[in-house]
Structures are given as C-alpha cells and as structure tokens.
Amino acid sequence: MSQYHIKSLEEYFQVYHKSVRQPETFWEEIAEENFVWKKRWDSVLDWNFEKHEIKWFDGAQLNITENCLDRHLATRGNKTAIIFEPNDPSEPSEHITYRELHRRVCQFANVLKDQGIKRGDRVCIYLPMIPQLAVAMLACARIGAVHSVVFAGFSANALAERINDCECKIVVTSDGSFRGNKTLNLKAIVDEALETCPTVASVLVVKRTKEEVNMKEERDFWLLPLLDAAYKDCDPEIMGAEDPLFILYTSGSTGLPKGMLHTTAGYMVYTAYTFKNVFQYQENDVYWCTADIGWITGHSYLIYGPLANGATTVMYEGIPSYPDWSRFWHIVEKHKVSQFYTAPTAIRALAKENISFVEEFDLSSLKVLGSVGEPLNEEAWHWYNDIIGKGKRPIVDTWFQTETGGIMISPIPFVTPTIPTFATLPIPGIQPCLMNDEGNEIKGNPAEGRLCIKFPWPSMARSIWGNHERFKETYFSLFENKYFTGDGALRDNTGYYRITGRVDDVIIVSGHNLGTAPIEDAINEHPAVAESAVVGFPHEIKGNALYGFVILKETGETRDHDNLRKEINQIITERIGPIAKLEKIQFTIGLPKTRSGKIMRRILRKIANNDSSDLGDISTLLNPEVVEEIIEHSKV
Ligand code: WTA
Image (tube, rainbow, N blue to C red):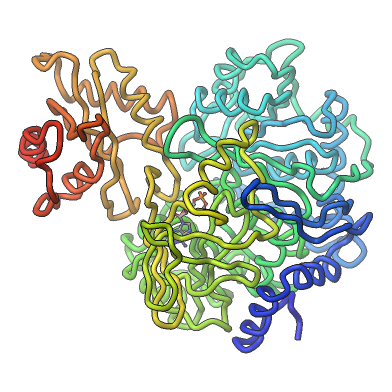
C-alpha cells in the first residue's frame, strides 16, 4: 500500500485513520519518501491553536524549485512541464520542457538578483496567464524572495493597496494582456498604481501585446534584454521549512484584503500530495486547470502541485468564449487533456450554450473532471457528468480556500463514490467538524453547522501578512482550538460533506471572493450617496450576483437614477475592479437597522432573493417601516 497514492476505498480508510491516529508519522513518511531535502527536520509538527502558531517540518532545509524542477531533470528533462495555449487559437501553442523551464527560471532568478532582490524581499507579479508568470513565481522561490501575485483584473487602486500592504520592492508586469478580442493595458494600470507605492524601486516589463507603453527611466525595464544577458545557472537558495514562500490576498468581510502567508515545506508536501490523489495523475497524463494563477487554485494546482509531481500542466491565456464557446473543448482535444479542472461558474456558462460546441470535439482523452470555488449545483453537475464526462468520468467537487493552501474535502476519483453537490470526504490528514451556534461540536450524522478544522495540516496559512492579531481573530477566535472556515456545511448519514456556502459577509461571485465592506466603502465615495449595504442574490451563471441598497444624501435627488447607477459602478470598477460591479442597485430611504445601529443584512438578503414572505420578527428594529418601503420598490 502506498500512502502517497491511494488506489482503493479500503486504502483510503486505512490511510485516513492512520493520518488521524498518528499524524506526525503519516506526514513524516510522505515527506521523507517523495521530496528532496537539504537537511532533515528536527520535529514534524509544533502547534498551538491557542497561540496560533503552527510549524511543520521545522528545522528542515530545502528549496521548493529543486523539488519542482532540478530533481526531474535526470528522468524528465525532455518531458513537457508547461503547455502554453495562447489567447488567439491561430498562434502556435508552446511546449516548455522541464529542462527549458529550469533554465528560464534560473535566468529570471539572476535578473531579480541583479535588481537587488534578496531572500525575504516581496515581489509583486501582475501578469496575464503567460509562461513568464510561472517563471517569475518560481524565480522568486529560487532565490527565497516572496511572491505576491495579484490577479491582472484588479484595478490600479486594488493593486496599489496590495503592493503597499506587503511593501513590494519590484513589480513584474507586461505591456498588456489579451482577453478574447480585447486587450488590456496592464502597464498603464501599474503606472497609475505606482503613483502611491513608495517601496517599489523597479518594474520589469514582459512584451506581450506590443502596444505602446510609457517606460519610466531608471525604474522600468524590458525583461527580455535583461534575461538574455543573465547567467543561465542559479543555485537554489537554501530555505528553512517555515520561511515564507508567498503572500496571496483574499477578501475578508471587513477592511483591507488579507495577505495570507504561506510557508515552504508544508505547502509543498500538501499540494503535491493532494494533486497526486485528487487527480490520480499518471506519468503521461496532460493536466489542465483553467483557474487564473492570481488565485490559490492556480498557485497550488497549476504550478506547485503539478510541477512537484513532474506533471505536464496546461496554461491557457484566454477566456472560455473566445473565439467561441467551443474553445475549452478544442483545447482538450488538441492537447489530449486527461484531467480537466474548472469552476462551477464556467460550467454553468458553458452548459447554457449550444451542445454542438461540445459535440464537434473528441473528448475521449478525459479521465477526471474537477470543480472548485463555489458549490457545484445539481443541474451543472449533471451537465458536466453527462455531456462532458459521457457518464463515465468521475467528478471531483473539491473544497478548499486561499487560507487552507490545498484541497481539504474531495472525492478521490475511482476510489470515492460521488454524489452530486457533495464534496464527500476529507483528504487524509484533515479533521473537519461541524459546530452549532452555541459553540459546541455536533457529533453524529446527519448534521449541519459551521465548518471548522480541528487539527493542523501542512499547507495551512501561517498568518496574515503584518497582522497576526487579525489572523487569530478571524480564524481562531470564534471556536476554541479550532480553525473556522467561514463556510456552512452539512454532513449526511454516511459522513459525506456538502458545503452550503459562506456564513459571513463574503460573497462569491463567479468564483471570486468579494467582501461587502470594501464595496460599500466604494459606493459611499460617490458624493450623492449617504449610506449603502450590499448583499448577494442567486444568479444563474455567476452563482451569486451583487445587490446594492443605496441611500442618497438628498431624498429628493433629481439626478437620473440610471446615471447614478453607472457612476456608482464606475467607482467600484476603479476601486476594486469590474468583478465587484453591482448587478442591481435599489435607491431607498433607509436600511433596516437594529437598535444598536447594525444593518440587518438578513432582511436585505431575503428581499434581494425575492423572498420577503417570512422576514421573521421585524418589530424590534429601529425603523421597521423602511422594510415595507424597500420591498415595495424592489419589485419595480
Ligand atoms: C468556496 C478557492 C462549495 C467556499 C479554492 C470557500 C466552495 C471559498 C468549494 C474559498 C466547493 C471553494 N464547494 N464552496 N467545492 N470550493 N468554495 O479562497 O465558500 O478563493 O470558503 O479559494 O470558496 O475561496 P478561495
């Protein structure tokens, strides 16, 4: 039996029980047998959920790029590591071997060094889905710099906020990005952001779209000539197991985005382990994850997990609808993709299109279908299963978070029997539990409550950059000695988990986490706005969309409401990005509030859901009369 690669349900249960009974032995054996280390750890796990300190493999020394690149060179040097599929289907795809990737990473690492970047420095990467993005991340890891990848759909303001929070020294970007038939001038966005980023000394610019950009003297450099001049060898920096690997920002219910800090050894071990099992990756498979690398799924399951296993991973630059809705299936056929991993919002959008977009293509290479990011509803599950999987490929509905680093609850394909809407069983090493409102664990099945994790796992975030207090407060204060996920879940009679959705003020729109507070702050910046509240409501494709209730300063505001709506969405686009735009905006005279002045979002959520039949007791509100008025106008 191999603990690293589970092949039957019986093995799964055996391995799972061992992982709970002897977690340290379990992870120690996996770490020992499947990775290369410069020095062995002194202890496998030190933890204290009360002090919120977690250390895995402390004392060990390694470099993650040695595990993702160097060690494959002898046996897989000529194997393709990354297949790059460009936005434009007439542009040839690129096959980058492990040897070639290794060389590019070393050269890029030398360029970073030449720019004065040292171990521990933060590097902001703001790039489209092109190979240089993967190379830049790995180059940081090579020299021990900490990458902070920012999704290249965020606005200048959101980018600046993230750069300043972790005080990046350098930004890696491109002239522009191709998105379907549009191009986006990324460099201009970076220029705007850098007006308020005093820590950034230089900018490396990849040439991609070849459009005109401003290059600021002594700050901005085209990357290519620097790469050409750089040495081809770069010894990996020897890192401690708990040295930071990267920071990745995620939205919280309030305040600034949280810079989740991930460290080296535990993250590597866990993402590699879950990649192998959840996708049952075999040596000659071609694996494709459609997520953008700007999100955790892209970090863990497009780059680190696959490369640590010596896999071939596809990187697609464009969007599912370009040049038409058959593009994904075209790519599956073209590269003979074996494992396909995408998001429910994409599945729902694809399912709405004509079936002929699928039927034209040979999808027989597919073995495993994956989903992540939000609940995969039953209808979408069936379409995925019937139309893409032809009823024969297991669907892995994988649950995890930026904070968890790797997949936590998921079927293991060909091993765990699946049921639509259930993420099924925990990965070995993961001890989930459900908590009730009184703060007690709900034992027995079936059960429904708040999803917590009772025991540390190797890839959990170690802190929020620069704010350990907030880390404690957000994840470890609600339930004693447990990590609280922010999600609700139910467990059926057989112990299978279904994730029911967020129980806090985070709304997941098209798979992107959005906190309501920063959106409300943006709305309130409009000079005509007095106050606002944002809630989510169900949307056929996006899963959720945003509904804003807005109070204007002057109730007799004579300005055209449609114009105001446009202006509000414009501010949101500037402050956060187009993904946070409101689908509906209702102007109202008041917001339902408790006597202590707290907005009753529960009521607004029901109204936005078109379900105002049972609002519960509203008589205790400060202003019950506004509820009627809001309901009345919501129907207009
Ligand atoms: C949600 C994405 C239901 C959940 C990897 C979680 C899911 C949040 C699933 C994290 C799933 C993720 N079923 N909900 N299979 N996967 N979620 O940080 O609410 O972008 O807390 O990480 O996505 O989003 P994040």
